[in-house]
Amino acid sequence: MTISVAYLGPVGTNAETAAIQYINWLKNQTGEDSLLCPYPTISQAISAAISEVDFAVIPVENSIEGSVTVTLDTMWRLDSLRIQYALVLPIQHALITKAKTLGDIKTVYSHPQALSQCQEWLEKYTPSVQIIPSNSTSEALKYLEGDDSAAAIASPRAAQLYNLPILAHPINDYPDNYTRFWVLSQKEHDQDRRDRTHTSLAFSVPANVPGALVKPLEIFASRGINLSRIESRPTKRSLGDYVFFIDIEADATQPEVEVALKELENHTETLKILGSYRVLPL
Amino acid sequence: MTISVAYLGPVGTNAETAAIQYINWLKNQTGEDSLLCPYPTISQAISAAISEVDFAVIPVENSIEGSVTVTLDTMWRLDSLRIQYALVLPIQHALITKAKTLGDIKTVYSHPQALSQCQEWLEKYTPSVQIIPSNSTSEALKYLEGDDSAAAIASPRAAQLYNLPILAHPINDYPDNYTRFWVLSQKEHDQDRRDRTHTSLAFSVPANVPGALVKPLEIFASRGINLSRIESRPTKRSLGDYVFFIDIEADATQPEVEVALKELENHTETLKILGSYRVLPL
Image (cartoon, rainbow over all chains, first blue to last red; front, side):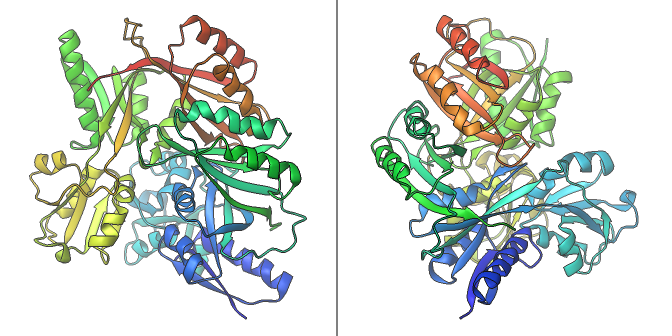
């Protein structure tokens, strides 16, 4: 049986690299072959895992730019997907261009996340260029066709795939640049519960929201369950009304975690368990 | 004396509307005239308030898209600016184009925040158009020149200013769309402390960050000081290492708040008080 895996395309994005790492790991574990399916947006890639494909490999958080908000908002909206695995990918940005020198570059194209991750480098080495956002790092490469004064920021792998020259690399402002991805699917996939080290959940609280956040945090703290992340997102109902996303370092089926989650239900308006999972060693 | 006010330009952005509301309020209060100074990026507008202008009016948070992360990251990096006031602006998006019907539109340009705030409308009414991000809503309007199949999403006011026709309005997916702005400056401006209803602060905690978040929240909760907002941002040091931004509903000079902030110092690595301020009634 061939497994189908959705990701934010086109070919050459960091999301594709993450998806490839996942299918290689899967092949190693189960011998199963996989088919990669690119989608034009992250929300379409997530929705595909409900009806069209077996898995979606989706970016959640970058160490420089923070949460991928569309991922959190879509997970809050949908009910049928669970996080099966997490994986962390190092991110490197290259300046890809047919220009011979930095002085020959007039425009730089890339995804807004990549542009902000290289902002200081660009201000220092190409201070007078025009910076133009694109839908993905790979899409930025198409502007190089027939224009030797255009440059794109994408991964070294994308340069190789599209057979384009790299002028500078790495150009990230911060060397410690990683993106965390989630592997999502509808069906429970990983039967081995031993290594499920993380559980992600999301909840809203009825009124006076952030004041009421103390209790949910105490529920975990008092049981020695560590929180590795907290993020707030607007509910989109009114300004100042939030959904909270929390990662705890435990499997939701551990007895003390089950009790904590039961208690949490009494202090939240809506509570969604997004999944218990392990971090793949890639 | 003329007061200078920085904002994210060019002319016609929502940031400009917020800046105009601020200078009108100022004129009413003090009789002082103001000069509006557009800057190409939010971080440049913020930095201008340190050396070039008297005030910067800067977006902080939108009720649909959440935090303006560049604002939080820049405030964490800088030390010399304080929040003087907050103001909340209702946001309306219009589809601006010379096309006669929706079917004639081939491309839609706008700032990524505006594009995501109209995503469902675009999928429903213009499902086959190409969507292209731009640096600001006003910048998107320049693509309409000489191209009747191009559309831009910007405010109705921008359409008026640039003398361009509106084909559909409002096209926001969520009617309750507001953006909160901060008025920043170096010098203490507002001598009247009575109405300072909010204090914003930012802090990092040494290790095991989110577990250690319970204590700071308890410090305020135990004193009945309400938190109206909490946001986390990456420190950019390593994945999983965060700075927390908190808004409390109190003036930092109230005695019980002073005690709370003193105690907070013992539970944080770095603590920055971003300012105590009132929300302008606009």
